[in-house]
Image (cartoon, rainbow, N blue to C red; front, side, top):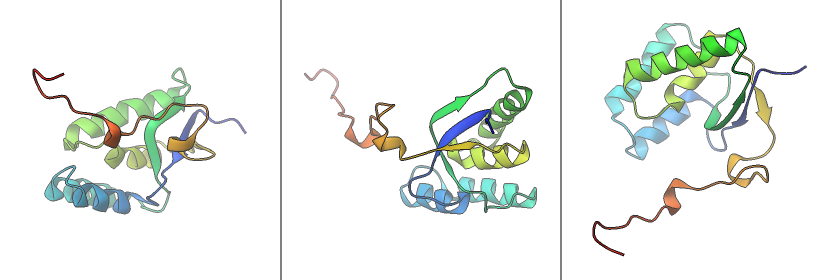
Length: 130
């Protein structure tokens, strides 16, 4: 069966709790904000057992009603919680809109279809430097 959205499964995390823990451990966002958002989703009935996707590459049929609903909700959640990581809201939005994404085989950082540029490998230039 054809799907309206496709993403890579997360290469490290199996659920949102694991993602939240890593965000906090790496200092990518404040613990209080991350926990507040996760608790909000759990209180809404979200069950954190539907997996975890990477958000670096998302293939979707933008003209489909369900995808439009997902896009609007994802942006709304991202803005409402003011966390710096879009992955904190994606699984809730997938669950809430009842999407069933196609899981692209392989890893996002080892795909022959896409070029991967790791955040870690970026070189920072000093102002005024060469």
